[in-house]
Amino acid sequence: MAPITQKLEFRGHSGAKLAARLDLPNGAVRAYALFAHCFTCSKDLLAARRIAAELTRAGIAVLRFDFTGLGSSEGEFASTNFSTNIGDLESAAMFLEKHYEAPSVLIGHSLGGAAVLAIAGRLKSVRAVATIGAPADTEHVLKNLGSSLSEIERHGQADVSLGGRRFRVASQFIEDVRSHSLLEAVSALRVPLLLMHGPLDEIVGIDNATEIFLAARHPKSFVSLDTGDHLLSRSEDATFAASVIAGWLSRYISADEPQGNVDVEHVRVLETGQGKFQNAVQAGRHRLFADEPVSFGGLDTGPSPYDFLSIALGACTTMTLRMYAERKKLELGRVSVDVSHAKIHARDCVDCTDADAARGRIDRFERVIDVENAISDELRAKLLEIAGKCPVHRTLESVAHVHTRHRHKGSSES
Image (cartoon, rainbow, N blue to C red):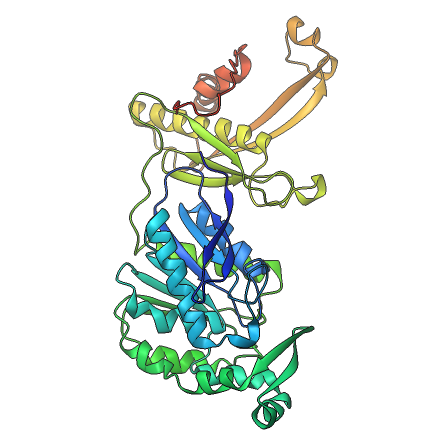
């Protein structure tokens, strides 16, 4: 199994080496997505990382890279423009197609959103496009240059401060962005489009989303980013955008397939490299995160290991009671189970055995069962008895054996 994130390089439009990261899901890949970052940003922007993490959680691999002259990529930024960005995107798509699979999803942030809108019609493999804070015309980016714009037009180039960093911008950049008609490309688009934009975006106003939406053909969708800023600098805004994209894409890419095969059933857990404890989990066709709370040094992106044990006990209990109710034709209504876990001293456990007491501290799961309809005391006692027959309950109370082995590198074992 490949690492969750691979550091890669490929040649861009000019032949310069472009730095990239390929974020891979834990298990089979449903689709490959290509992410284009915002003007003068990089592949490692919070929004890019969050979106990649959420999409890999849904089984989608994401290639994000630094455009020529930015981040860790080679080349001179002063020699780039919107057309070269499109050229770099085409190079990235060709790289994916040659070494992995042609991208079926394009995602772009800000000017990167404009770039994916411009290129989507050229790539036959693309099945869906999503943008975040994209401008309706490429010339909009010139507003970022402020008073330096006139200096560039007078002298052919100028050093400009963008996002706290200095960049040299040449007049060819200005001429190039003015030459593109983005809305024509949008109106010619023949794939589903998702537009995400914040009404409080002070860099690219919300009116841009309106123009793009009106120019686009159906199926098209718009989702407001509410109070999110242009860069989605708050983690909760970036996570929201990522989860919306992942959910929306489920309609336009192939369904997730169970991992493994009919002879071997297993759950795969793999570190993501994000945070200290985050793990990507795949169980059959289901993908989720395991993590620890922030107070324990985690990112709190998923249940903890003991939460999963509690989930297993609670779910098994409701399923066991449901099977019993159906067999006996009992009208219980909905069944719920609250499960809590703690480590206690065996001497404090009133219902523990002598063997438990000999172990000192033990794990104690407390289970509270509730049924929606009113039931008799006799039936209540019977349900408690049936709950004790839940397979997970029996596993937890029995002595299970865990056999562990190390998989040698190069092994073909599943």
